[in-house]
Image 1 (cartoon, rainbow, N blue to C red):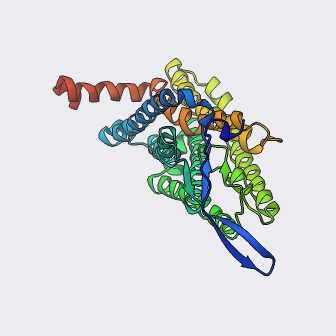
Image 2: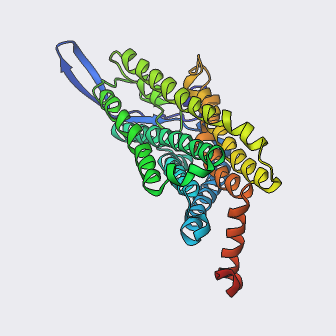
Length: 336
């Protein structure tokens, strides 16, 4: 449905005319994000729901980080990785949700081209770092369950720090040069992006120059990155499954199963939405469906992660109960 159906006087991008040896061309300075404008009657309700989810997401992930620093029982490699994962989830939502919330209550849904490229860069680099941390968490589960005697040596403190720094830097550096290539393109319009954030594929549709090499690189990076990390996670879990089944004690069996189940739940949610949007063929034919599925990565998964990791983890629930007693009930025994 054309946007003019809902807005009789649609906004136009600011266009600057220039000249070159190839003639006159228009350069886009601002892009219009359609977002959920087709749901104009429900935008206030949608704003309230997403704002509530955003606040709960921040509080839930901050709670995980705070609990890890407050209680010595959670100061282990597993929870160190979980803290970094929670931090990344908050940063991913921060790149998208504030703009989405502002657009839901605004009639001026435009972003400068520089802001679009910046948002696209940080969203995909941070989200990709999340996949790397999930891969490291799978490796941590493998060592803890399959090689418990060697765990302190393999997953030592310095190794944890190096793995997290590598996750933060690897994809960030690998995507910088690719983003810089996009800044060299001429974006000649139209200036409309049918999404609530600057998705890379939709942003390239605004370019007037040849984008085939850039699009191929986007697809290549998506395939290599998503499939490689997913394969590493699968390879980590292949020996984990029989190892868990052979644990003699029921308590150890339950503890290992709950840890792996929490991790696998997040993996399925994250990789399922990523493969659907960025890897599957014909991904550009259903804009509204892509927006809904993208909400899983930007809104639903970061919101559910704190609940998944706390409700299925007995140690975290125990720490939460003790911290609650310390703060609200002033129970001296909880401090010991």
